[in-house]
Image 1 (cartoon, rainbow, N blue to C red):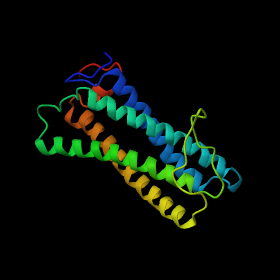
Image 2 (image 1 turned 120 degrees about the horizontal axis):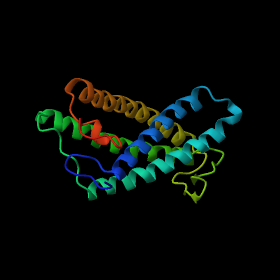
Image 3 (image 1 turned 60 degrees about the vertical axis):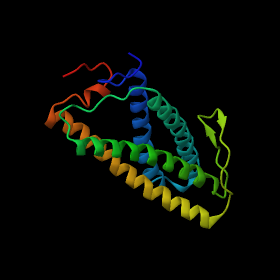
Image 4 (image 1 turned 30 degrees about the vertical axis):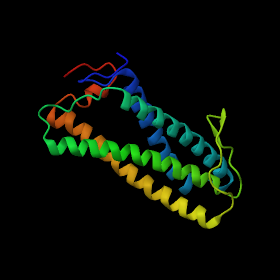
Amino acid sequence: MLRNTSTRWGAVAQTFHWVSAALVLYLLGHGWWMTHLAGRDTRLSEYATHASVGYFLLALIMIRMVWRWANEVPLHPPSAPALERRLAMGVHVALYALLVVESYLGWALAGTLRQPLDRTLGGLVRVPQITRSGNRDLHETFERAHEVVAWILAALVVLHIVAAVYHWQVLRDDVLHRMLPGAGRI
């Protein structure tokens, strides 16, 4: 089933979710690695790779949001308290918002570098610069904001994973299973 139902995420939503999750985990790990461990001689090429993956994630998130708005969203388990439903909705909205904000901060940051990056989406589509090159103050502002939002995003990702495991192991409901490809109801 490609489309969502009231009880299960469809294959398209599942694919968007897991590809986005993999890209977010990659970008968080790669971002930390390239700013703390990568050698100076490779850092610029690492920034370019990071930016290219980030542009792809931003495009995917935009398509994913349109898909979500145009499709049914599975209902929360009937046993879920109202507070839990509101918290789940809040975390999902925050994840989407932070992913968009973090992507735009990274895009703006990439434009402030003294040495231009190869700004492409997957090496195919040229991505325009949205800030001026070489502005050190702007660079530091975007760099710090990008880092802070990355840490907040990482914390929300951990919360999201913990909640999924809690539903799976403690509540033993189908919240996690309905996002797993091929998994039926438990």
